[in-house]
Amino acid sequence: MIHHRANARPTAMPSPDYFTGHVTMDPIIDAPAPARIRAIRVTFAPGARTAWHTHPLGQTLHVLSGVGRFQTAGEAIVEILPGDTIWIPPGEKHWHGAAPDTAMVHLAMQEAQDGRSADWLEKVTDAEYGA
Image: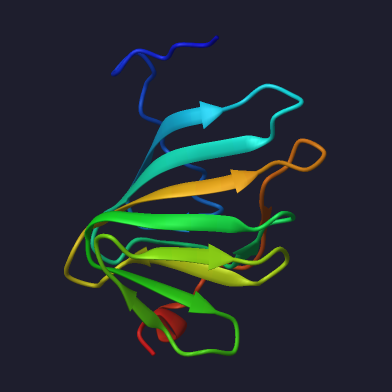
């Protein structure tokens, strides 16, 4: 058993190569092999967002608070609200983040394949975010 006590692990600031705006990450679990689950509580300040990315085994997002945005490449932006859950299939290019004037917190859950759980691509432009 591994028991992570509340507030025992520090909040992390993700790489600015993969995010726009102020984002913090609080680890939930990065299970040891043979398990592959990784879960993070991600807090986005208003207007903050991920870069475009994919996941080798897919991703589940569950919105905890605030108002967010989600987009799959080639589709319209979708507003996401507390209680919403989104399943992103393996390899689907997408981004997610907060609305322009409202922060958003979600749980991001994905499995690792060969040690990686995401493939990061180009940043989402202001024009794409505001579409």
